[in-house]
Image (cartoon, rainbow, N blue to C red):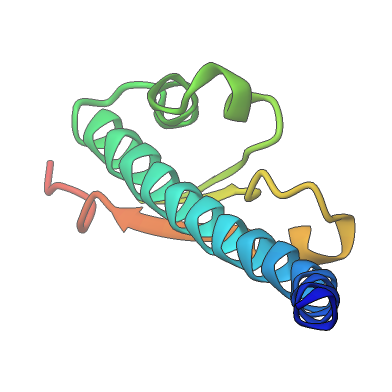
Length: 112
C-alpha cells in the first residue's frame, strides 16, 4: 500500500510543472485575446472621431482601459488609425509576440 502512495506522489510531482505551464499558456492566450479586443475598440473609436473631425488619437486612447493607455501605441495617418496594445503577460519574451494591433479607416476624404 505504501508503494502505491509513493507512486502517486511521484506522479503528482511530475505533472505539477506541466500543469503550471499549461495554466500560464492559457492565461497568455486569454490576455492576447483581451488586448486584441481592446485594440479593435480603440481603433474604431479613433475612426469615429476622424469622421467627426475630432482628435482620433485622444479618442482611441480614451477608449482603452486606464491600465493600457500608457503602453498603447496609436498612429494616425491620413484617415486611418492603427492601435497596438501589448498583452499583459508576466513573461517578458512573450510580450512582443502577443501584442495586438488593429486598424480602422474613416473612409476617403470627403469632397468639398
